Image (cartoon, rainbow, N blue to C red; front, side):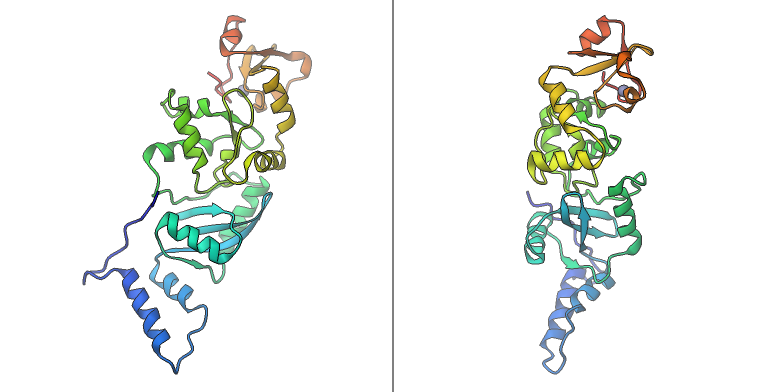
Length: 275
Ligand SMILES: [Zn+2]
């Protein structure tokens, strides 16, 4: 899928990108002048087009982060700068250049977001996505750190309860994994499922880094436990909901289905909204 974006145009009809290319090629053609390696980055930055990128340390190792004035557009892994740039051009269709110096504020925000020190105040450039895909990703952003929700939860919350499979597809194509936490979305049977940025192991690593307990979640899924109820409040929750963590084990009761919970006189928790 080519997510080509509109290229800004100036009044003469030439695209700003054409001008940038011409400028760079003219400068290179001046044999007496050795263009510094950072020239292309500087030109692109000055013209305000394309995306800049840098590498960021995460629980999954170094990843490439691309951004532009609208927000963060891409988070991905690649074996080299060249491989990243090529993949970016193929998928996003726009210019990409290494950031000469990543903005310190952005890097600081990303690092504290990954460490869980702050509610993410990040802007994303999701222009290449459909309205449905954007809705899925923005809903995933609402899942608290250390918790997970099933695909069906996202489908229901965005008003498309039958679109569970499409939710899974949208999450699999999340252009900004880690920052939009698609790793916090699990199969509707409670199993963790796959993850676009490195499969099941990477998903477990991300969840563990955030304080979730993948082993317990998988065990509950294997045993058919989908919800637990809190006997003191008569609310029922998804297994990872923070609501239940405040209660001791003896105040817990387990349910295999939403129907069983409701028949037992329990109401859906207003924090995790399991129904
Ligand atoms: Zn809950």
